[in-house]
Length: 86
Image 1: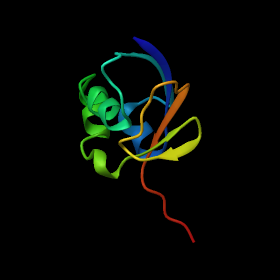
Image 2 (image 1 turned 90 degrees about the horizontal axis):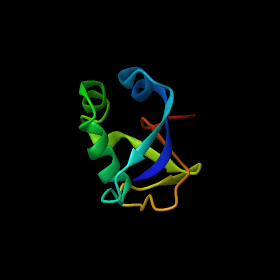
Image 3 (image 1 turned 180 degrees about the horizontal axis):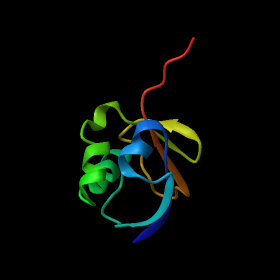
Image 4 (image 1 turned 135 degrees about the vertical axis):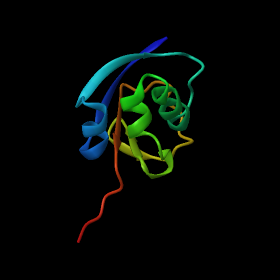
């Protein structure tokens, strides 16, 4: 197991009910997509937050990453909805 700080923003945070937490992630979870899938199994609030993982964005140590990005060595992973701006 590897302990990682997870941070949730906007409606991801609202659905989970936490702004952040530290979790022990199994070594078998290697990518952002696998982490999102693993989180879905932690309870209905996580399942609801990650019900459509294709739209949830992630950042590892404050750098935006794709779902296939490896989480090895990550200290912090943030999840957030797509952003719009102008």
